Length: 440
Ligand SMILES: [Zn+2]
Figure 1 (cartoon, rainbow, N blue to C red):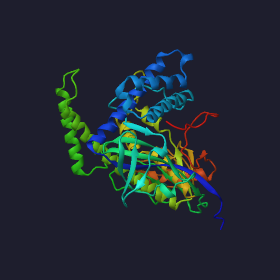
Figure 2: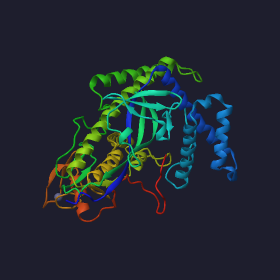
Figure 3: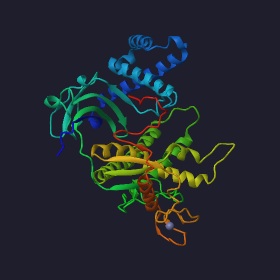
Figure 4: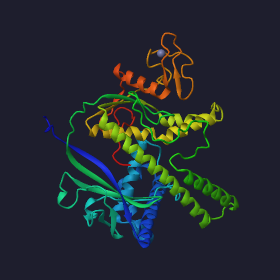
C-alpha cells in the first residue's frame, strides 16, 4: 500500500471548559472588557487621524501609552493588547479586500467577550488527571480545564506538533479556552466510498440521494408552524423559555426610557441566553456527529451552492419594493439558518478532506422543481413542501421533494457541472487575486 504518501500540516482548534473561581472570573472579565475598550479606543483614534498618520507603528506607540496612563487598561496583558491591534488591522485588511464590512465600535452587550493569548509558550499546559489539565493564564494564574482530547504538550510537543496559542471565550456556560493546534499527520488515502448528493431540506434536515436521509428526530419547522420556537429544546424547556421571555418583556415594559437595566431583568436575559446556548450545543453536536458519519461513509459528497445571506435577507425587501409572502418566507429562512447549512458545508469540507474524500458544489437553480427521474421541469410537480409528483405524463415519479432535489444534485455533478472542488478548506467567495484571510 502507498501509505507513505507524505505528511500533511493540519491546523485546528480545540475548545475546553475552564474551571475558574469567582475572583478569577472577575479578573478575566476585566481583561475582556479592557480588550474591548482597547478596540474602541483604537477605532476612535484611527477614524480621527488623517490617512497618512495611520500606521501600525504609531498604533503600537499609542497602545503602550494608553496602557501606562489608564490604569484599568493595564489589567490586559501586553501580548493580548498587541493581539487586539493585530485583529483590528486585519479587520481593515478584510474590509479593503472586500471580504467584510468596515470594522466598527464594539458594544458592551452584543460583543462576545474574549481575550487572546497569542503565544503558546505562555500557556505551560500540563495534564494533572485523566480528565483535567492545568493552563497558565497571564495575570490570572494557573487554572484547571477539562481534558477531553489528546493535546500535543510536554514530551509530545515538537516543532511540528504543538499549541501555537489560545483564546479565552465566554458564552452562556462561562469561560472556555480555545487552543490553536498545529500537527503533522500522514495524508489520508483516497476514499473509495460511494458518491452522494445532499440537499438541505425543510422536511428532512439532510436528504441524501441514496435515500439514507439524516434526520435528528425533531419536528420539521415548516413556514406555517411559526409557533414551534426551538425544536432542540424539550417541552419543559420550551415552556420555561416562553415563561422567561414573557417575564423579560414584562420587566422591560416597566423600565422608563434612559433607566439602567435592573439586575432582575439582566438575570432573566442570562437565563434565556443559557437556554438558547443549550439548544445551540445540541444542534451543533448533532451536526458534528452527522457530518463525521457522512465523511466516513462517502467518498464524493455533492452539495448545492446556496447563497444563504441573500436568501435570508431578501424576504423583507425594501420600503420601495416590499417583499411578497414575507411571513412565510421569513419562516422558511429561519429554518434554513437554524439548520445552519453553511456550517454543515464547512464541517463536511474539512472532514471529507481528512477522510480522503472530496466535497463538490453544483449550481443550485431548479434542483427542487426538476424531476430526478425524467429530467423535465413540469409546472405543478412540486405539490407541497414535502411531496413531489412528476406531472410529466410519461413519467409520474413520486417521492419526497428533498430526496428528489438530492438526486438532482448528484446528477448535476455526474454531468460534470461541479463548480468548485473544495478540498481541505472552507470555500470563501472572493474576487480573483485576493488572498484568504489569516486571522479575524
Ligand atoms: Zn418525471
